Every structure is written in structure tokens, then in C-alpha cells.
Length: 463
Image (tube, rainbow, N blue to C red; front, side, top):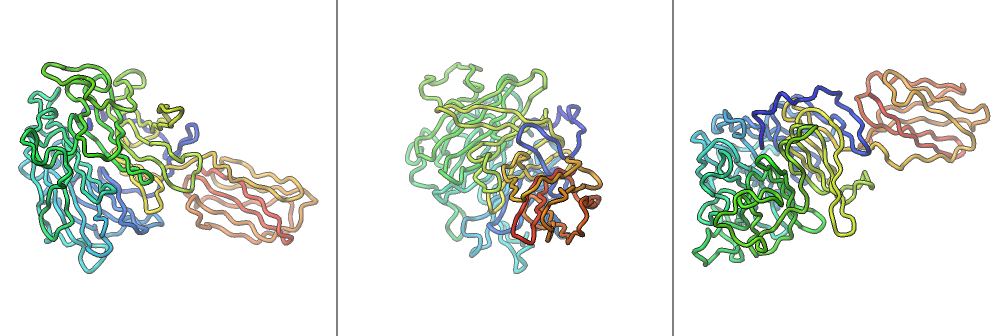
């Protein structure tokens, strides 16, 4: 990812902003350079800070005082793209308490390490570190950093091309280097790792055993689609194209093209294989322009249940414009839409255990929930009209009932997670005012129940 040279493009905007259907709702704050969001199949979110800490956010958006893991003393984060970069929990974490991290050590090299959680489920034992793999990094940038488990149970590791610019040592196409690759290893054993026999270069001296695919510049975030197991990769471009790759998990050894190609455009094809052997991106967008787009943050395909209109959309972001992009499959091709701008320089996405999506603002330390502001959930079985105003609201909202409205039993207000934040037993006046001064900014739902079983649900926005 291109962090360093673009901080001047930070847009100072409100935390809650509308753009088409996609919006961000502040969920947790106070983090320092958050670069990854993961879950452990429970209600917690684990937030990775670039300096070397992992913190736990609970379902209500509160952050534990004690970090889950603190390896700050082992991590080099002086380079803009260095630090603790990735986290993933073992598929059998509930029984083996094992998780994996990707960080840059004090020598400036990539380390893939395994840890276990202590007897306290909210605190890892930093003394249990087992270093599985170390990869020499010739420069400080293009470290990749993502970790993910595929449906095959193997650990996938995303590494950039080693840095500088233009891949001067051609690492991405060099099958004798781990750089510019997606590696695949089997970590199911009690110690160390083994290489899956189905990896494309096992038994073939042309390439290293750990390599699963190659030809990547700086894969800044990858994820597996929880519905079909396909891999999604956001690969940061040089100065022409930002690209998104989507492939099924097979054992063929994909070549994603860098540095022969940047996106679908030629970059340096000297000594390169035929274009017919390249796996080109399913989508790309131009670097530069107005607004100035510069660095893609790969995300997830939405498979949650709260926002039906999001179903199947792939979410990503551009770090410089603070836009959130979506890809929608239509007639065999992916249509791209940009939403925003938002704020905070989105550097990571994550899922919770219910497959709802979150985003991390690197520069403002905010964890956002991605929400749909046009939810089709409003209903009204009350026999007479009633009004809810102002909407959006700030300090209060007023409900005005028709004189003939059936007597109201309760009024409840719920947040986007379905938690009731206020419940009122109203008087019989035609106009009822509710204070919202203590509400966080975001989307809420006002439900009115009558004594005769009639209901009304209306969406309320607080900004």
C-alpha cells in the first residue's frame, strides 16, 4: 500500500456520510494505525495496529483495556509500509487456541509466526511465538501482509514484490523468490509447517514449493468468499492501474502478470511469457485523475444478512480518495461503483462472525461498520398516517400522530445491530418528542406498537 506520500489528501469529513446506498457508521474509536480486522468465530473483533498491538473490540463497540497481543518490541514499523500487518485465526481455534501473524521484524524482514492464547481468552501468550517462515525484504515497502485460510484448510500468505518501484529485481516473476507471491502452507501439524503436495511447483525445480501463485506487485489485502471459496485480491499498482483479482482455488499456479502487466496494460514485457498464460484482473481503475485515486485496499464480498441489497457485492476502497468501491456481477461482468468520499484513509476491511463488514481508518483510528442507508424495512399497519421529523435528526425527533390513531402501547428505537437503545410508554398526546442527544451518529429504527397489534417501523438517521 502507498501510505507515505499521500497524507495531504486526507479529507476531513463527518464520521457519518451518505453516498448512494453505502455508508459508514462509527463502531469503535481510539486506535493507532489499524491495518487489519479479524474475528475468532465469536462476538469479538480483533483490531491489528501497525506498531505491533492487537486489541479486542466487543460487540457493543467497547475496547478491552489490555491488548490481546503486544509484540511492539519485535516489530519494525518505522517504514511507512512496515509493521504488524496481518492476523488470522486457525480454523480450529476454538480447540487449539492458535493464531498467526505477519509482521516486519527488527531486521526489516517478513516473519510469519504462530502464537497461542493463554488461559484468559482475551489475552494471548506472547512467549509462545513459533516463527514458521522468514522472508528477506530488500526494501521497506511492498510487504503485502495478508493472511487467510482457504476452504482447503491451508494458510495463504500474501507478499509484495520487495519494494522500491517497478520491481527492479523482477522478484514477482522469479519463481525462486517468495516475493510477489501468494504462498500456501499446511500448518495443521503440531509444529512448523508442511507444503501441500498439490502446490503447483512441488517436485518441480522451476519454482519454490510454497508458491501457490505469483506476479503480484503489492497485494494489499486478500480474502476468501465465504459462499464459494474464491480468492479476492486487491493489488496496488505502480502509476497506471489499481487492480482486483478474483480466482477459484485450484492448483494451477496463477500468474497475475506483474511486472509484465499493470492491470490489463503492458508495463515491461521483456522476457515475459505469452499474455495467454496471464490471469488478468476482473476489474481495474485508473491511478490518478480527479479525484486522485492512488492505492487500492482489497476487501470482502458481502455475505451477511442485515443488508439484503449488498448481497454478493465485493467491497474495496481507495486509500487516497477515501472512497469505498463496490463490484456487482451483472451478465458475466463486474460493474464498478464508487461511493463517498468518507474519511480516515481506509486501510483494511474485515468481517465479523455474522459476515457483516467493517472498515478501518488508518489516519483517524476509527473502526466503521459498513451499512445500507436505504434498507427496505419500513412498514406501517397503523390505520392512520403519522409523521417522524426531523429526519435526519440531531438532538431530538418528533412523532406526530393523527387524531384518530389507535392508542399507542410502546415506542422503541433500535440501532443497526438490533439492540434497543430507548423504549418509551407514551402519553396520549398527538405529538411526542424524543431526545436523541445521547445517540451516536448512525441509522436507527423507530418501532411503534399499538394495543390492537398494529405496528409501524420507520428508519431514523442521527447525524
